[in-house]
Length: 316
Image (cartoon, one colour):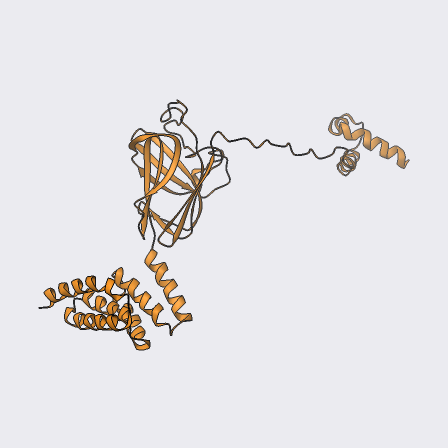
């Protein structure tokens, strides 16, 4: 009886639904047959991975890294070539989102929060796309999904930011290339050039905030290091920021050790606050200390004297 029931169940498994409707087996028998079929051991082996030949890519991989101040910016992309084709408006159609490279997504990575053409973008990794609407109306797009193949699966809802830009005419670039220009401590331009077009965006970082956080962390661990205190004050004086904090640092540095270097930093700080009379006093003191303590001081002395002369013209 049991064997007969099992045979009926297996027979029903192949056309369970049709047989239930035809009355050849019960619904319970059909479900049992399906259950038995699911747990049956597999008879096929996994397919082995197909080997690939190590051949050059038509659009080679490229990696560009630039440090802007204290922030690392990375562009990971592939470089298509023109190869005699009409690019803008044809190979890259107007009105369609383009991967801004070839093969996988072009990826931009920022180690810290940045501003792109004035719009804030959190630190992280983004897919980079370009939307050329017409010859002179483009958008640069950062998207939070980074595992697509080109634009497949692209969803505007995941866009982090869109930046309107106007492309510029440029010399011929057979291969697409990303490059940085106008690199400064707090900002730089990232450019994309291909064929005879270039688009760019301004990347800005809050370098002073990050530098100050690092300064405070190091000084907290080494509060008695007069050279580190002087270096911190010098950074603030050079960038004309946090004058009161710079004064605190340089006074502590001088308390620990008086040298011509930290004395001259205090002179410059006072001059930046337009206290030229007191700056001259500290400047002259720095000259005496340098002449007494540093055998290489002669190379720096002329510029210091010129600066003192400038302060004297402003003080009197």
